[in-house]
Image (tube, rainbow, N blue to C red; front, side):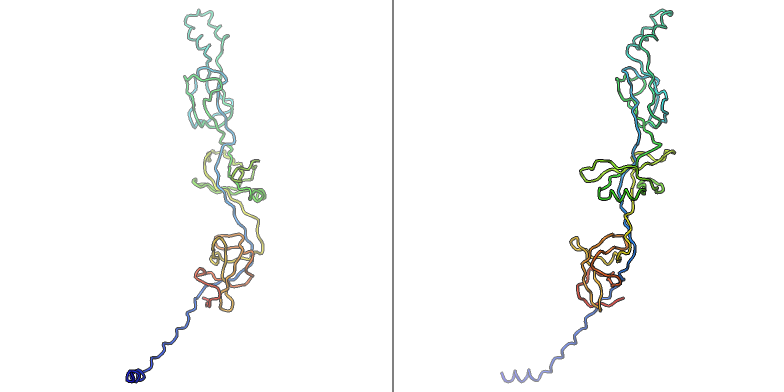
Length: 298
């Protein structure tokens, strides 16, 4: 036992390894600044007819002299065809057996009825063709006026006053090559839907018939400008369970600050509370930081 103790005492003492100095994280920062900021509200909608009408028969009978096809242009008051009532059709079929001097009496009996276009526009649908028997009030063709269209979109009611105050809204076509246009607000529907929205309507003049019902559009308008707002880069924000925070750097240490955000743009965010002007905020590696960490600035 004594020998073992003696041998152990004779072993050279192990040198203690030098402690590694902590490596400080380098971070990029930016100053909290003041400036003006506004948001853009966007909704989606489509073009719709403002005026359409059915070409219909007021009497039962056979449709003749009708040759209109989908896409044909028509004018209000234009003769579209003739309706021959069943009684007159029977008389005409018996005309060969009537003496010539009495045939003029046919026109004093049941007469043919002219079918007149009720509005100017484009034939959108054709339901009956020449030779068909139509009922009283039966639809023959649908006519739409394309010269003036509606732009319609579902607007959440929380943006009603903002849209009303904007007066003119920007309309962009999503699947059609055409420049964006600014149109005045014409009206809002009076009834709020189950999803708490209402329909906004804009008037689109279309004399060249360039636009057609059903085209999809994006409707956008700005919110009021927030002046002298506290602004930070979007990269500084960290989101956690629906709440936001960021890190400031003070005396080389990070400080976690819970913040309330306002308008959020692609590159910059309005901060309503939690920071002050000219503070340094971390804009890089924020998700890897903790409160009270030593950092150096790039």
